[in-house]
Amino acid sequence: MLTPYPESEAADERRKRIYNRVHSRTRIAVECAFGRLKNRFRILLAKLEQKTLGRICKVIYSCIVLHNMLLAVNDSCAVNGEDPHRAELQVRDDDGGLPDPFHNDWSLLEPERMDIERNAPV
Image (cartoon, rainbow, N blue to C red; front, top):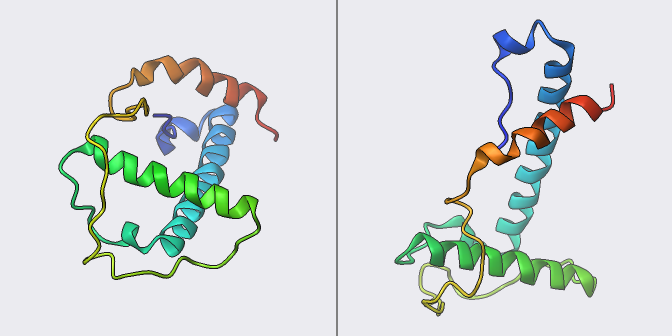
């Protein structure tokens, strides 16, 4: 995961301050996107009662896909349905080829972080 530089480290280097600013803007955009997703699929507001982390990821991934499909057909209304606490969600047990976001070598992203620093607009 790409993280911002500590303030003490970024204060002395302009490129690190720029990176932190770009990182912050991106984080805010992602938080807003998840807010819209939670507003449309209220099940995401409650604790997901799935048995494994993989299944939780599938539920979230499915909501993202459905949200994008609804946007593609210009559906801007929130989804109305049953209380998410009462709904029984059926999710397959296999991982269905979805990537596991919790088991990655994040150090591989360091070159990406450096590239963002070098190419960020001032």
